[in-house]
Length: 307
Length: 281
Image (cartoon, one colour):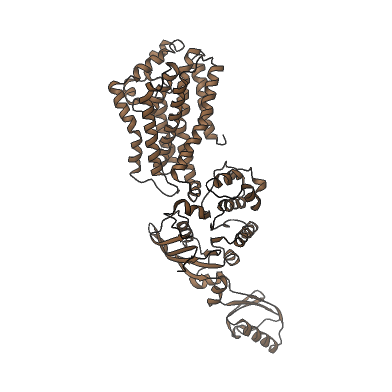
């Protein structure tokens, strides 16, 4: 385990009745890093983050946040963290600015309500009741509340779950800004795009265990995942011909396209061009798709993330 | 005021009772108003019982409490702030009831204001704390509502808050002397009609205060933030400790208390507007 890490998680286990939610989860997050826990629902992401927030106690193992134990460090720990929880709400008849004023009043040092309203695009909604906010506005308020004490560490548990793509992108922009402020951020998600776009490092979690950990690029390089080359040619190819090209592990015909899965992309492309010339055929279009974290998850678990 | 249930139980219902009591039972006679106002004040104070338990369970079920849990606010601070805000929301209703009693029903005098103030203050905390206890030992809103209904029914009908204590059957009176609500109603009537000062209400205040203190400590101990966490089995035993002061007071009252004689004396004050047949009946 890295010493001096802002967040340290060592061999966590947690059981709910007969369900083993965590089976020895370990990782460390450095200062100023955006760290993602990526996995399907029920993988153990929320249990891990809620143990780190002090909302749950592990059955065994240990955690520390800014060198503090969430269970025993009291107010000092609470001052250091901000959290946007997954399953939470505010009273329906609480106004937006009241929520920020109230939660801000709990801390000795706080950010101004007006500043937060402006930053999270909630100025027009400052007097609206919580019940009148849209899903995206509620989530922006949750993020503003997580930052009300200007914390060192921010926990975001599924911050974009259930939001439409446009609102999701707004949330991404906010996280990018926090990243510039050098906040240490732990984010849980089951969206591949979110993990790839936002996170410096990602731990892929499945069945209560970390099954892979690294930067999105490292994970892709380390895996044996293949690159997909989508090819469209002028005349149909004889079955199996493209599958014999160098580096190709699989070839599928799909509508007018051929999908070539290759472990050695440059060699496959050279071979493809030669082959087409020999056959007096022409290349109409070619598209290369690098393996995504989804492919890596599939490779590691045999399942898709949203199964 | 944004919460309709609160508005109903803490303002509309007590004022409706005031008009029904003073207008119909009191037949608009000014001398009956202090007795009836005391009952309405007691109902207002007892309304705290509903408001806080329902609010706390709603907050727990909706996951609102767990959001507070990641802040430096502790359980005792959460509960204490809810008691204080409930108290300050109750005071305007009390003031409106006094104002209407004087302006609409021509009540003269205000009773012993200090005694009334202290009874209302301690009473509000006591009944709100009892509400917090119910919230601590119930797991769902449905359970909370059922237990609240049962306790509220008992408080309402066998404490003197609706049917005057002397008119209750002897067996019911014997049970009523063990209820906090009975002492609140009786204390307020004595302060309104006899101008009883604080030292003479000492036993009542001590019991209400003792009950409030135990109920608060127990509810802070049993406090649960998470919707899925369940009340431990022994929680109900702890909750029962809150009624110990009234068990002791009830025993003392049964042996050598004067609640019955005071209640009868206070009732005499409205004999004029209340017809004798109604009382004997």
